[in-house]
Image (cartoon, rainbow, N blue to C red; front, side, top):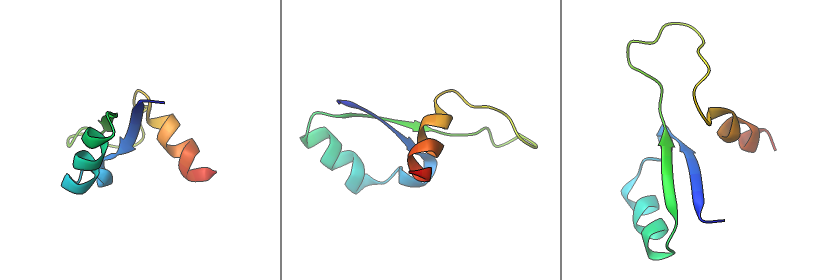
Length: 53
């Protein structure tokens, strides 16, 4: 596993530095600032499923 998906809350310098050191790719999944209500975001379900485990 070399590609990680993370919630916007995990967009932190320490995480990014460690991921770069370990040769991981981190993709931050964010919602739009002007989004109202629920909207399915690409790959967001992977993040939510992982939190549920």
